[in-house]
Amino acid sequence: MDEAGIDRGVVMTIVDAPAVNPQALELIAEACAEYPGRLDAFARIHPWYGQESLRLLERAFGLGFKGLKLHPVSTLAHPAGEETLRLIRAAAKHGAPTLFHCGDEPLATPLAVGRAAAACPDATIILGHMGGYFHVDEAIEVAEAHDNVVLESSAMPYPVKIAEAVERIGASRVLYASDGPACSPRIEVEKVRLAGLAPEAEALVFAANALRILDGVR
Image (cartoon, rainbow, N blue to C red; front, side):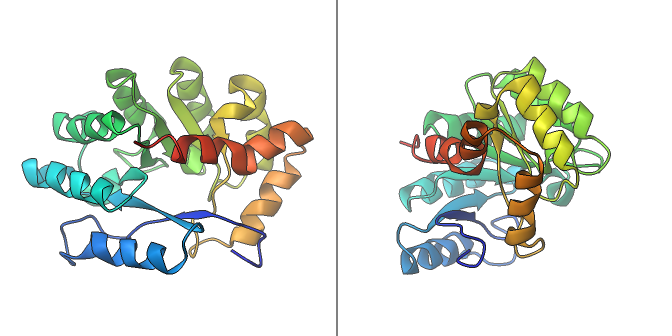
């Protein structure tokens, strides 16, 4: 983060709680506590555990987490399935966003996640990776159709599509992200700069939008 000029970032586990590590939420909370003001936590949770999933999410917010992360590829839970919608709605009650892995795989395409956005209009839905390599245009179209959808730029390889997204849905609904450590935060920063945005729009994409979303959590 220091090398990339990033003051504040979001972290989460790479597995879906409660799998593998029953103390996954505490692991992330402790990491954030080591760097106060620099790291914010999202809870990556498997929707199929019913009330246990909801309990984990509430526990996460009690620990100061700022959002929910859902990964339909690893959970095989449809974005618009009722078990998933329950979690999204629970997060929204806290004013917290839901970040989806959104790419080229089944269950994770923008149209699939768009169904969740339509079902939960009061929730902020972030399309992580902005549709991946082959569904970027679809991601922009979904964001045009649903005002509660935000596009996140990490691991999507086309700077010109960041500029197109800003033009079509407005700079206030496009976010910089790095997907680190899988991707280099510095390269992801340069990708946004290569989009050639106006200074005001670039400032929104790099920081102001994320701060508005993160600091809205109750």
